[in-house]
Image 1 (cartoon, rainbow, N blue to C red):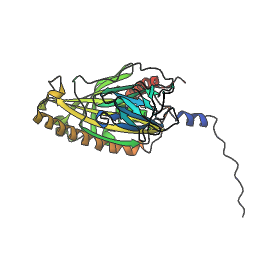
Image 2 (cartoon, helix red, strand yellow; image 1 turned 135 degrees about the vertical axis):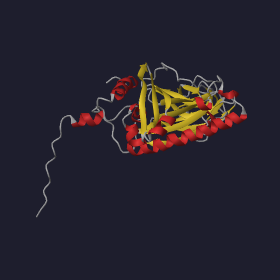
Image 3 (cartoon, rainbow, N blue to C red; image 1 turned 180 degrees about the vertical axis):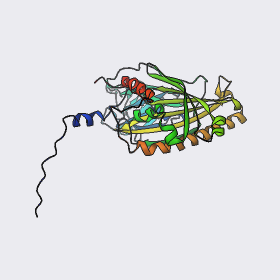
Length: 340
């Protein structure tokens, strides 16, 4: 018996459109590329961002800079052996020298050419380094949010790579329905999500799903702040300990449907305006609490990772009546993408 070639299966005219819509473009906004402590004066780092390299460096007087990776002379990668001399970045290939504004200011054997490094707009807040992305190259239209307390920086950090869009990961925060199912966490909405331009705020009461006595004892009120699709901060007051804890979840697109996720925690005295002014014993307590908070958060993220790494993006999710927060989030998220 011979096999015959089967005729091609008919496809709906909407199939190609539906599949195309499942691929999101890179969103605009601020995205974390490193922690401040990873970039001391004189250091050069390379980070992957939206399928390209970004070279970060810090001048000897402490200014952080982010540039596109290739020297305009003959294309050497500035992150592969580039150095900082004083305030300037020096190419490893021919020692062409670039000032903090990107201008070529020197060569080993003559006047510098009219050349300039392409720079990214950079911002440094709470011990994180962010760069701005806008598809058309427009300047930042909003700022990275800061904490109310000065001097709060992360003391415990964890990161991983996720096969998902940044939007899918941060959207998880608004998906209340998965908390009791996947994480065995009870949730009560104290303040419904409110969009304020590129920011989205809400307050949730979270606690163990069971038993009831433990649930009442451990319930805690969490204040959530989303700033674009790359930044989530959770503030958790712990008044019985006189502390407030902070958790950051940063989602940085590194390639097509690839995201670098960084989770960081910090703790501070609840009544002090400046976290840096705590005594040495209190700072030890802060670090211990931050480590506990990070371990708890990461244990939940590991459960999410099994979903994120195997799911697909649904451009038109069939939402249930109790998914109002997700519907609001999807509407809010549109502002970070080019108009269709």
